[in-house]
Length: 364
Image (tube, rainbow, N blue to C red; front, top):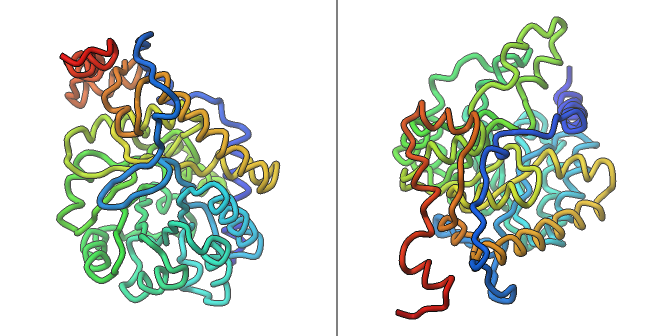
């Protein structure tokens, strides 16, 4: 099967997953404590976010999706237009197809040509050579480089990699060689605390935990196998909120993607420590079903509703959401217990005197 056909299959299967999704994931195990006097004035709310020396106008980004075929090039063009019109940062899908076949370069390059002033991230896997990583950055004039980790996708992939031991050393080589920040991300199976703690030694500045709950690439690749004999890998890994809770106090900037369904999930992820939040599957489905105008409208609505949530919760900035009280329920609570995570602290974050005085207007 050609690389272009595989890319088209990924889009088709990911869209089918979105349509068939049950709607529930572990973000539903996270709830805000409502404080009726915590609200602030809407004009005081800002959406800009800063992490690892990078400032984005918005805490929401269009995460890695596709590229490498005529159809996916058209999708990337529309995604780039949506990013340009809303101000959202955007990431390319894996650019491995470009390394194999440079004739598909424009299917990735369009992310920059349609979005000349935006924040654009290139995307390679951990087996990419240093030269290819540089080529990826140069092709789309990337502001940052994502390196994706995807062992649970490669394993059932009929043509996938089976050698993973060299990945840490190769990541270190790439980070030392490129002139833009490197963001290591999963593809929907999550980054554990142990993985995150290993990344700074490899020169990595930011990580996108990209947990379970959205597009399941193990399921996608298994559906491409004649016998579908890797079904036991469906749902592999940790959810995005589990990863964020597992990562508390690692001292390392985090992004969050995987299972983001609505603005409340964005707020939940920000409250659990993410510097910004990305979505792929939901945006892809909107684009496929309604076109670029529908996607621009969806992102704009999400941003307006996120600002409304911040107003109600008393969070002037996305970072201020980390001072809001949140409760952890259900299976996510069990995960925290097993991992030794103190979830009580999240329920009592607004109890400090300075936050109480903000609620009452006191200056004492």
